[in-house]
Image (tube, rainbow, N blue to C red; front, side, top):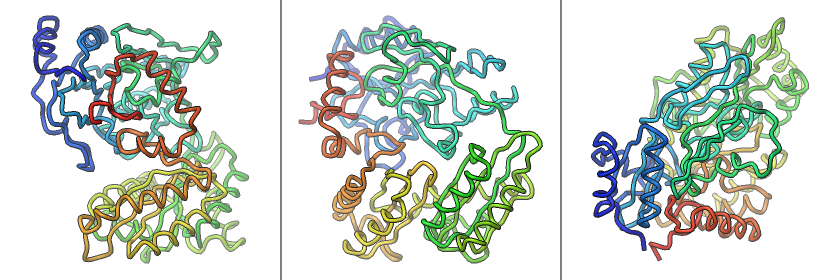
Length: 474
């Protein structure tokens, strides 16, 4: 049984830390974006140094107080909100928001965990470099949370997930010990790679306080196009042609369905859509190429070859940065439109890339057997990550289908498992998918993860209920 953070623990912590570390518990720290979790109580602390984080964790470890790390609060699986009846420490990293250094000649930037992703991107751009992690919440998501969940985004196809863009970490472990692993090395074979252990651990093994981030050269020229394709198989075939044309120059290849475009038209009519009549399926393609290469010409060739092979039937190529931004705005505002409609059940899944067309067909058939629903299937085609989201039909709301949510989720996740896929492609396990991990996860892998958790966090104070079941609620 954990001890409350709002009793003797708070008194003892206040004796160690300045008053400015403590803050009133505002609503944004007690609710997550989808409104599925509500924190009952908690002690909100906002340290500004790694040493202060160490002091907080050391005392929490000694007294058996649960700690919930909090980044930008944008997570969609409940990892940032505790549902425990015993008040935890809510440890916000937002005041640790300094970019400590940038080594442009090494393509390295060192940022504290509370730095907002967009600020890292802008700093890199100011030095003619690129930090390639990019996602819809980049204006509020913070580096610590993004690394803790191994975030994905639209550039995974070319640059990889968050873990692929990290060289080193600074971490405070549950007992307060500080690991200064802010390496700038590309090669370092000196035992276990603790960096990759902490990335994706969702705050269950410690608190990431800073990171050495890998930058990349900025493409000399970028081109963006949207193309109406006949179906998901046509989109995959078009991706193959794109790779033959420009190789690793394919920065993004996003699949969108008419249902998502209809949702945009209904809820966000000011978002300019590229086609007067929404196609059933379309892809957004971005090429980033080197000096002397024209991405617009490459996109034109891609469209022509797609047309010749019967894969596409319409297309537009951005003629300006503004035009390209409008194309991207369509893709990036689809999640917002989804929230306004209100999903019955949302699924962040991945399957082997070549099986995507068959998966979509079988998933749609499954949904038709379960009832009358609207499906918005979209996502990162090039890395196999789909957002397969189920919505009520017009005239009904998700509250009318609360009794259907579990059946829908189970049916889709069972199908994903059958295809050899993952029920959590880029958002993590959090609290939402703990039972899914227990059901679909490899037993040996789960056993090893539990052993690691017990070894590093023997008292279980770090983000209890995330990835592993919370004993406090049983």
